[in-house]
Length: 355
Image 1 (cartoon, rainbow, N blue to C red):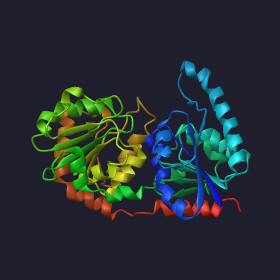
Image 2: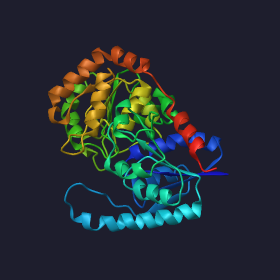
Image 3: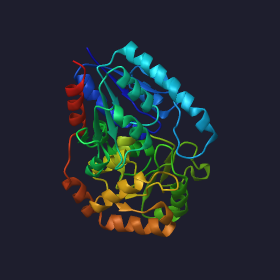
Image 4: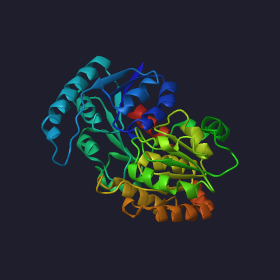
């Protein structure tokens, strides 16, 4: 039987593309294992898929001062040794990495064991974890043509991002049953990322009295960010995080407000949902979400509000503008050139696996 190790973690965006590959890999009779961190979000998501999960030590590599900078390199070294052991124990034919710091020791260990590695980079410019891993990669897949100039010539392939097939098959009626909302009113879905966004949550909640006169709101606000005072508000539901029901919530959404993580916006494009993107600021990130969002804005897919300009007025104006021009946004996304990311990536896996 062919064997593959998948890796990636830290955020849902480093895990869900791996999950999207699972049905096709199973069809091709791959024995699948997953290497992640001890307590990251990937552990619960992958264990639900009934895949063997192997946890290794993981440390974050920071470009700024933090006392943990003195201890985390030892965690990374421990993770590398654990990953080397797993390479010799599991004997994979290939490794596919979606990124995140837990993936770095896995990719390095695979190179040491002479196992081919495919990396997927979601953003326009590679993050630090992938930059460390790229020299050990056999191929690098990416979402944006702009990314090719940042990658080694001859290694990179524009594949797009794997989208879970079930995400395209949501049911609006099921969403209404789940949320208690009505199918007869337009609905906004708000997604602040798997960890939520305090700034988006606060602005949205201040706008609620006005919004609820015309809209229903489904608010994915992140772990620990529920507001008990809003429980039972007519037309408003809030959840920390959604997994299985997400496809149905997307089906119910007429407009989406989202961060600009690459996987999230690729899902919005695949679903052709009119959207407002609020990328993480450079103060809180390396600016990759801003580049992602501006690329989508340029292509006519999205309305963008940078976090520094987010206010009740700017968000209210954006909602009105996107709703008024929703047909143009939807048409631009539907007419855009689409690639089958799953088939491209699985094709590379089949081509590069050890014979």
